[in-house]
Length: 484
Image (tube, helix red, strand yellow):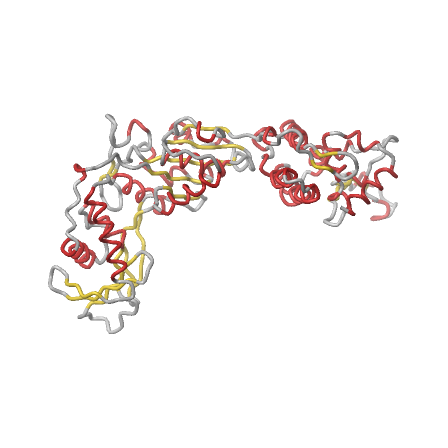
């Protein structure tokens, strides 16, 4: 996934998975653009992001995040409610998956392009202005447009005394009626039909005919972030089978299903790419829905210390330098030994510090590293080890930060190990063995503690020998760091 323009062809269904901070969302942009426009070439990340934003604005790339409450009604189709002049009504509403599937099936034709130009012209014509139209039954109404996704309709003869902002006529429904001819999902259909007829008459728009396609259908991409956090059976329902490449529209084994709410026939087009992301620290891959595992290609994205090129070391201000690659590798080796590889730390956590040192700003790099440990690394370790501070100390190497005499060097420790003073707390009349469960307590250094700004504290994580310098040397190093 890191090969820029030389990436292999993108699979129809794929999931990028790995621990937090490994760049899954970052590389999703690359995968999505490559899927939507395979021929696109770029040399800079800015060019790629610009193309991605353009494809998003054209709705060829869409984004959704799964969560525990997300369901079939939001993803495929369901019943929704709306209020018109205080009256509640219900209608079938398409979800993001059904919408993008429908859009992906529309083939480009000259007539479709002409229709889009005519529709755009109508939006400009009706922007803040009133246009008088008539339905097929002879009912007159006024059409206006104030931006967003709907025209506003004001019938001349209405039973409602106060129309407010008027009735909505969805631009999406006008497009759908033109390309499919299906009115079943359209509300205020008489007005939508009248608007389409107006476009045909005034702008000489011909009926849509997909057999006159001028080019192959464009590729579409649906990005599903945190795909493992949703209930796959609840969200996909009967459509889980349809996303298989061999079961999609256009294949010899194409399968159609009848949707439960609208009763429409439905299949998944073969030019729709589904790209998911999955945080393995949030839920183990072993617990992943089997139906999803069989239908997706899984691409592992693990921490990569190789991103930090050699030579870009952070000057800690005491004649020593912080090696971010060694720091990351050491932390992850200890996490893997105490927990597993799915809960390691991603290289993205240290990239702000790395970018700062590449610019030659070592003071800022140390500040960014300090922020990463305070706000990301240690809170994540707390979550991984359920606040078991003894294990967190092992990961940070605080237990190894000892001077030549074997005493703890507090200036370099993020988590301090202290004895319980049971006699002082409870008196000496009872034996502590009767009520004491722990011999030690652990205390995280507060925000103002000197350890956060001490470069030696980070070096000692992977090289504990720096702690064996004498106390005077460590104190002088600390003064230099505070001055920086």
